[in-house]
Length: 239
Image 1 (spheres, rainbow, N blue to C red):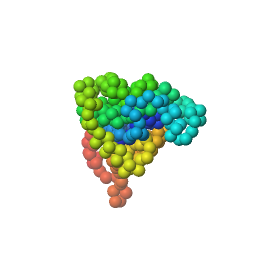
Image 2 (cartoon, rainbow, N blue to C red):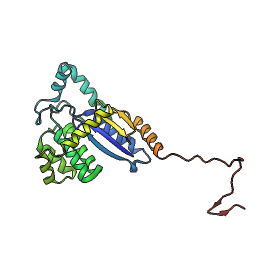
Image 3 (cartoon, rainbow, N blue to C red):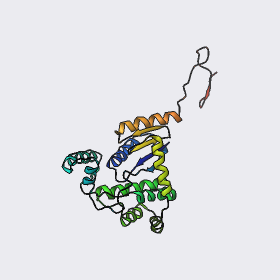
Image 4 (cartoon, rainbow, N blue to C red):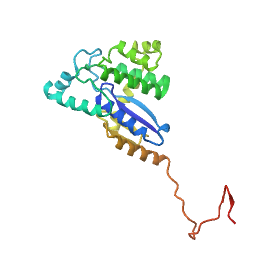
């Protein structure tokens, strides 16, 4: 089973949704056979590449509200995140561009597979939300990438180029094709879509349904006359 997750590294609900999916997978009997791949989505492609403005006033301006109006909403989100074990510093994060972070996530997938990409995703989310670092800053990105296990020289080469920019654009185009206008957006086996940071129970329901689709149970029925047929087993054959 494959789960593809469209998300951004500056999206708090993406972090919450990640934790809720992980909770569901922790209780899923077939979790070892589930592959999770992260896809790119830019919440604001026009954001500066090295942000200095705090996120709060930027979001307030976007929605035509005051900072004081937005503050209780962000506090509520932090409370929700805390229930998932996350301590988010939403009042300290900066409004920054994420294209380079997404390009590194594609590098991780290409060189180390889903496991390395997962580690980098967690490293980037933690850098932005729990340490309030600027994930548009190449120094921050380099530190997060090497911490996750990527080769430092390869990271520098990607950051100094436009490598994987086409892969990021392809992910965003696919999200649009699926009808996703926001993130997180989860797609299971290219068959089931889940929009938003749903409760763990919702993820569990979809996981079980998707597994049943590809691993249907066999219904054992009696013979035409309704009688049990003779069989042989480990202890011999019925006579």
